[in-house]
Amino acid sequence: MGYAAALVMMRGPPLLTRMLNRVDDLVMPPLARVVALTSGSSFRTAVSVLFFAAPILAVWTLVFGQVRLAFGGTTLFKSSGMVRPLIIVVLAGMVSRQGQRAAMVTMALLVAWVLPIEPYRAVVHQLTVQKHPLRNAASCIQRVESASGGAPRGMFIDAEQGRWLEGLNNNWHPMYYYFRRIQPWTIQNAPQAASLERALHDPQEMRPAIVQDARYRSYLDGAEGDALRRGGSPPIIGFFGYSLLLPGPYRTCSPEAGLLATP
Image (cartoon, rainbow, N blue to C red):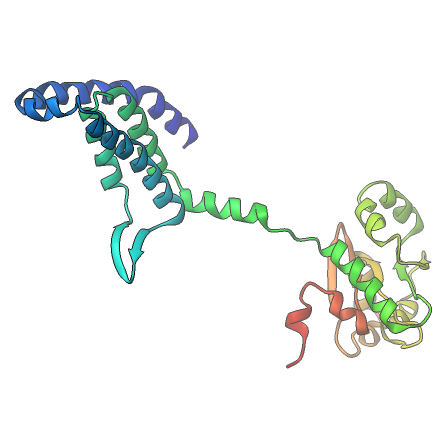
């Protein structure tokens, strides 16, 4: 698509310029009186305004859809397509003897017309959408701990020490960056489902937990699976082969907290 658009913009304007010049040579001589009017400054100004306003109108239509100008409930002007702006550009270029410039503008508008503008618009919109689940979760956990009024409970980390230390230097850097302020960290190197179960369900030990995905699946499939599922699985934020589990009051720190809230 990009190559075709570039090819049209390279080859199209010269061809269209020759066509406009030929039409101009055929049409303008019989309209000698109209040609004489072009020497007036007012007429040239009006044509110039149309020549520059029409492309702006066309681009606005492509980007935002229908253009509508109303006053006092009365529609003064409405445009929802590219045909009329293109006709205005061509006619204004011919009358003002700017066939080459009109050809360039017309070809650019035609290329823009056939391009998938809607997907481009959606991509541009997505670029403005900011999602920071780890940063937001970390800030929320700190707020929950501050609101509790007790001593900070920190984080429960259920992962192999080797993989944990390796992760701090690689994939774990974002997690360490966002969660390093949530202290203390209780790190469990050897698998022990009962310790994770207490972190998720015991009111005295409840805290957010980071667990290796493979280890967590093994817990759920093992003898402690029913205990871990007690009261329903906590909200989970997944990242790089690990999961952040948010039990009890920390459930509000999930990106889906609004969906999880009971009416």
